[in-house]
Length: 150
Image (cartoon, rainbow, N blue to C red; front, side):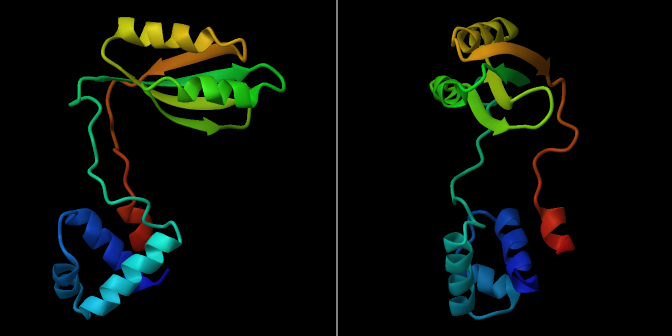
């Protein structure tokens, strides 16, 4: 990825509804260059989607929690399948250390979060959970500083 790719991505994030012609104007390059770069970045998986960023809180799920899971030996696939069936689980990452998985979970309320955790624990593949509720977001997801440092 070169400087133009980084500038293109930063500009696309700053102006998500902008068309290719306007992107080319903002970057000072030909429209065909922008189109080729966007296609290349999409094929390589750098650009993963063009959809809107949705706020779970604004969509009715204001509680954000991070739930660590310990999984029964040899039952990772079963646990992941059970987690995938819970729509409020937005992400699941395999981790090193004392926990096996880290889940990003949203809920309508703390009572709803408790129901979600109970559902997760109903799977025989999940041995234990450890939950932390986020009180605020100090730095939201960002990629621009990383792109600009490249």
